[in-house]
Length: 321
Image 1 (cartoon, rainbow, N blue to C red):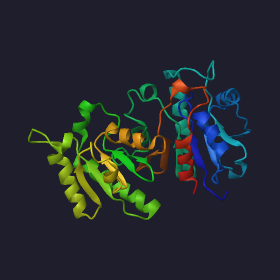
Image 2: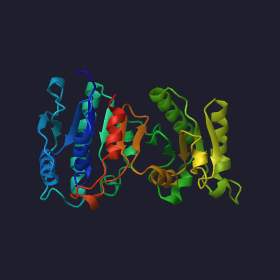
Image 3: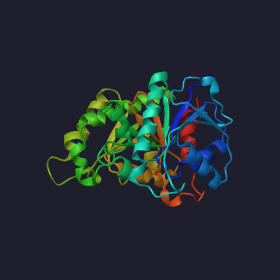
């Protein structure tokens, strides 16, 4: 084997992932072998329905023979999944299947010391209910890295990172701390230095409108400003806090590589307005690089063959080194 394979967890079976995967391998040739983990029967049925034609190279779950990989075919580790129709509504019945696909992937990664994982979109409402806030936290828990991770939505022109992820807005302020801000800046700086040989310039937003408040103990005063001062003293390239309503104006954001925000939609909404699906979701701080397309299962588009594969292609190209 010349190159380390990219491990791909298919994710929610009732999603557009197989469709965008078929489109991604049709449009591009990847140097790294691709190993997808999911239901062979479902993949075959969706492939026929969507009008794609690929041969499948089935691999055992205890995979250790790299000579069997063949990128002229789909390298597949089969995880069984019962279904009546290959395009169904999302429900809890897929939870055990999804859990098994991740368990198989993590065992292969640990056993072979692999470092590249992509997962298809997951329904947080069904799969993660009662477990964790999001897939970032789910994988952090699985790998025992709970307190030292960060979500980075990466685009070459501008990336964003929320300090809190899938929290209700009423709870966001409770989870902002100087330590979390330090962790995000440190992980993002390490990522940019490793991958791009540069120390990134990072903007940090406030939480309250205009970074102001009419009460004494605002999050800006208690956490955000002290964290920025400390990081500056440690020679990190950080500025802020900036009001979230103006930092994404072109003449402002183009000065930075990354904008760190205090909550999920504060930074993801403007990024998607600017770049659409041209971004990938990277989890920093895990023992491997984990990437997912920056969109959900999109079940309303299931079976229509109209879904955009851009984000998955970006993820594959990023890891195809």
